[in-house]
Amino acid sequence: MAKKTKKGFLEELKKEFSTYGLALIPIAIGINWAGGFLVQTLKLPIWGDTIGTIIAAVLAGPWVGFAAGGLTNLVKNFTFDPIGAAYGIVNAVIGLIAGYMYKTGRFTEKSNWVEVLGTGLILAFAATVISAPITVYFFGGVTGAGADLITAMILGTEESTGLLTAVFGSELVTDLLDKVLSVFIVFAVMKKLPSRMLRNK
Image 1 (cartoon, rainbow, N blue to C red):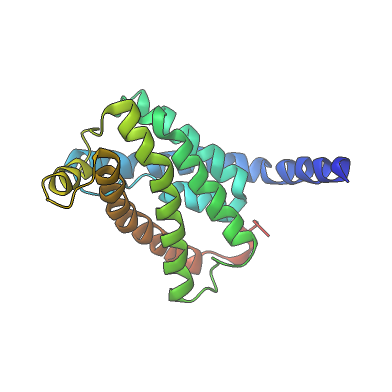
Image 2 (cartoon, rainbow, N blue to C red):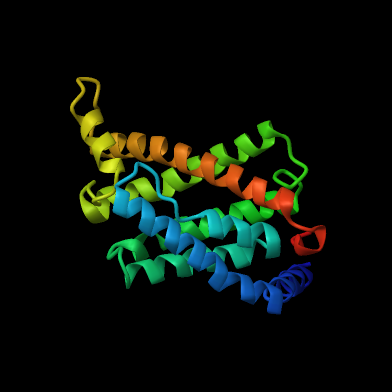
């Protein structure tokens, strides 16, 4: 059984990382880079760097999305975001989850708005659970992003229970805005694409 499972996984990887899948990765990175750069320049309280990841995941597969997401943050790290690499796992996991949600029919071009919203909520929660501890334990809760303002506001309230809670709250707000917006953008793109491009089945 283990050998069959391993063989099936390797076949899945081979299928995903076809010429088509490999070609999507730099395109996804470019989309993510542009979105992330714009958001960071304008200091907006979102991230803007996972739209390409989600597109790659739904078009080619979860592991292509994983690769596109992780590589995006490496590129950001060496261009405009010196702490980008630390969050590479977040972007990668977003691709993994989005790809499997498409593959299992939970987020497709035929989804209704409730399913699309649900996908955004799942991605937002997953991103926050991973990123908040990174922000606190590696960067002391401050990264220079728009979410820092929300963190400061939470810490300034009497109900604040500590830095990790404040960062979790601020990043959840930010991720909810970001991931819901991102999945609706990707959904709109999927609706316009010919079915032959949607190969993650």
